[in-house]
Image (cartoon, rainbow, N blue to C red; front, side):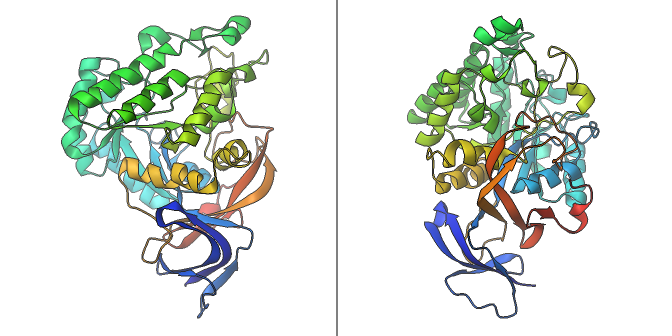
Amino acid sequence: MASLLKNARLIDPQVGLDEVCDLLIDEGRIAAVGAGLAAEGAEVRDLAGKIVVPGLVDIHVHLREPGQEHKEDIASGTRAAVRGGFTDVCCMPNTAPTIDNAITLDYVRNRAAQVGACRVHVAGACSKGLGGEALSDMGEMAAHGAVAFTDDGRGVQNAGMMRRVMEYSEPFGKVIMSHCQDEGLVDKGQVNEGPVSTRLGLQAWPAAGEEIQVMRDMELSRLTGAPIHIQHLTTARGLDMVRRGKAEGTKVTCEVTPHHLMLADACIDETYDTNLKVNPPLRGEDDRRALIEGVADGTVDCIVTDHAPHAHHEKDCEFELAPFGMIGLETALGAVVSTLVEPGVIGWARLVELMSVRPRQIIGIDRVALEPGCRADLTVIDPEAVWTVTADGFASKSSNSGFIGRALKGRATDVYVAGRAVLHEGQLTGPYAQGAC
């Protein structure tokens, strides 16, 4: 059945659209955009006061399946994504077994087609078992639908190996996503090196452990011609490197996370909240402000969650023993609106670029725009919704969020995937409602 979304503010910088009007969905696609559209038998939704944008995309999530389903699985992770307003996610390959071959990749893609509430794109590993020693079956995975390659979780440590990864992947036209972490410098680091690590007596994680590999991988990109995407960038110097690299013509893009934009290492105190233990770590306030500036000036290409679920018992231990990571799919939109849009750092059009347009371009998936003929993958946002993050309010299996107890502004109310409502007025629909919180 056709759906007519009336009186919403439609925003899409791709087509120069920012106005209150109507949008008609028919047979999974946008049939018309304009003022005063006739219903003609369509189901009518009055979305006055709401914003409609091309579906949000997160190109850095951990769905944990196969092998770690006690933390998350494809069904629960995609429900969490939809609750957060996402129509598409790209999952990382550090599963058990690693997604380093076509068989495992096909399993994830087929499983997502069966149980996924949203679209799932898969990044394959650069090296077998993430060991950094032997190339994965990159060509085979590219042929089976891998959208990118990454050794996310630890990164490719050897520069010669990273060069081979880039050279081998370049003919496939797939971006290499780089987790920049020099293990020789980072060692067993727990938190950002600085006053906080000293005061709390926790092993320090120097910014140079990230920045050295940012520069290395940009230089290797220049050498090989392969595009490089810097994952979860956290430092001012690293951002400056990317800024200069772009000016010089390097094929480099970068991402930042909401938690690195909103939180700094000073948030970690004597309570030793393990939900704030993330990789890379929360940095100092100067770095946080620099990342915000990079978002505003266009250096940062996209915002991702690095959604990293862990079971409660895994995080409920000493800080040094707890795994790195926090969940983020259900809080990302509110965190970005609260940190960037509400204070006037960026406008809504820039948010759409960061969380919808550029992510699609980076991993090379189909363009989605608010114009007739395009697939109706849409996110409806209530920009005035004020809500508090609670530990028992997640669709995710895990609740290791660093935003628990914080008030956020802005929330997705509806999500359409190929014209089908999978989130309606804040509630998951149909088969996806099972297990929702």
